[in-house]
Image (cartoon, rainbow, N blue to C red):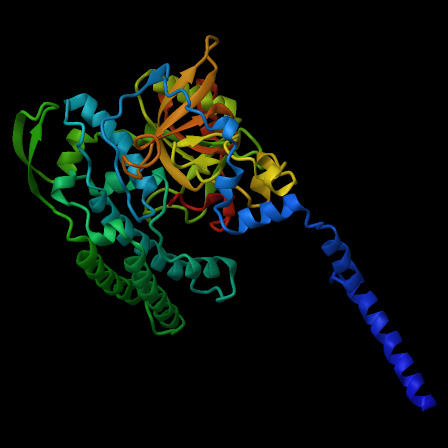
Amino acid sequence: MKNLFIFLGILLFCLGLQAQEISKNGGLTKDQLKTIQSSYKASGADKALRNAVTGNDISKLARNYENATAFDDHFSNTVPSKAITDQQSSGRCWMFTGMNVLRSKAIAKYNLPGDFQFSQCYTFFWDQLEKSNLFLQAILDNRTKSMEDETVKWLFQNPLSDGGQFTGVANLVTKYGIVPKDAMPETYSSNHTSQMASLIKLKLREDALILRDMANNKSTTEQMLQDKKIEMLQTIYRMLVFTLGEPPTQFTWTQRDSKGNVVSTDTYTPWTFAEKFANEDFSQYYMVMNDPTREYYKVYEIQYDRHVYDGENWKYLNLPVEEIANMAIASIKDSTMMYFSCDVGKFLDREKGYLDVNNFDYGSLFNTTFGMNKRQRVSTYASGSSHAMTLCAVDLDQNGKPLKWMVENSWGNKSGHNGFLIMTNEWFNEYMFRLVVEAKYIPAKTLKLFDQKAIQLPAWDPMFAPEED
């Protein structure tokens, strides 16, 4: 019996040491759990809040009703917007935004009807084929690296997406031209991309493994690899035709004015149509960004962040937000819309279409604070650009300082403020990230900064995921 007590004593001592060791290693001990649990007093007010939160949308409970009154929708400077587009259940915000910039110019120049649109489906078709080629060629370029290599892993994780940015619009329109929406309308799969994309991604991953196996065979020549890649892309092309339709090489289109009167009926190719209605010098478009985690006045380039293999990587100049705002104001004053991207989900009142950092008071609801600044949010992956829209208006005070901004969105005219979103300047400063602006609105001293050699960043940098909301 005595030996039994000794054994139990030693066992309890060892368990105590084990508990202490767990605590030292960061695990929660029973005493620590009791401390945590005892901090919740379950008062009457807490119980009422708990009942409310468990059964409701948190944002509705955190709504700041002092900020929920009607807001001023007057703007001192506005670029006229004719009609709202709708990307539906797709990640093509970048494409709709870029093409809305081009559409705005075409409508103004040729007095086109307000509902005129370029075909997003046409450009999306070539985007998906080009991205498929980009992936397969990148697999070949990295054929000697192991499957555990960071670049190879990233490629297999991201063989294809429907997200993107403005460089893609520029490269695709330059290479494939553009057509009116009538010439290639939307399909179910262009509006609902997930199922189509998942099947194409599955096929691309399978093809990538085949290419890697071929490349490891000493008898395989470079020409054999390229021939095999083209054979694989023929399958992707067929899948795209079945889901999106086949892109036209020639079409007849009747041009009408804003009142519906016929101006002309002509036969076009995508390139002749682009030459007339979207004849832009894309070399004059520059991307600027506000990323407080990286050095300002430096140019950055993202590896593999392009839509076309023989196109351009995404490149941008990092600037303080105030300097970006000044360029945007100059562009709007000259009736020129811009490609604009932001972290749209933060403090968005979807019913009103209003973005304001005071829309919701989550801190008071949970009796805590959420105090990170923009730099801290970006560096901890709490914030990043997620959605592209077309910046079209600014409201300036008597001193020329911005009070609020407005963007033309691509979520349909029943979303937000009649299809638009309005944001306070404070929200703009905190959650705006990217702007594409023409050279003539950029100060000469700033424009010269684009001549510097770009700092290369890896494709998997979380700050540079493609806009796709």
